[in-house]
Length: 69
Image 1: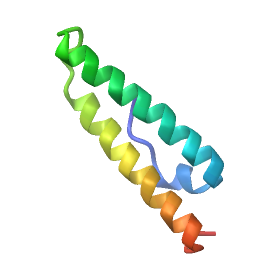
Image 2: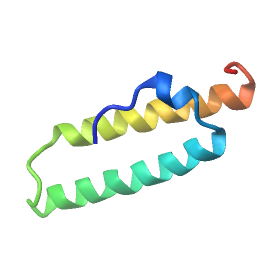
Image 3: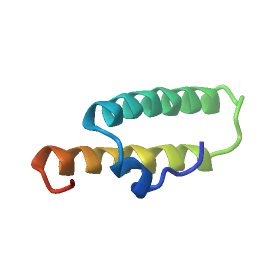
Image 4: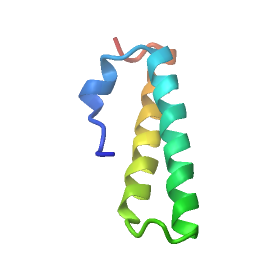
């Protein structure tokens, strides 16, 4: 999964962002599990998923506070 752009995420509703964050968390879990069992050697994907989760969480907070249109 590539990095998500903040510009694209701002166009989504809070419900869509919450659904996206759950999907990303499941994917991150699977990557970590596969890393333990040596099925995956690409550790940068874990970093990208963590950053995407942080980006989405920040936008959800901003939208709930009313800072973003």
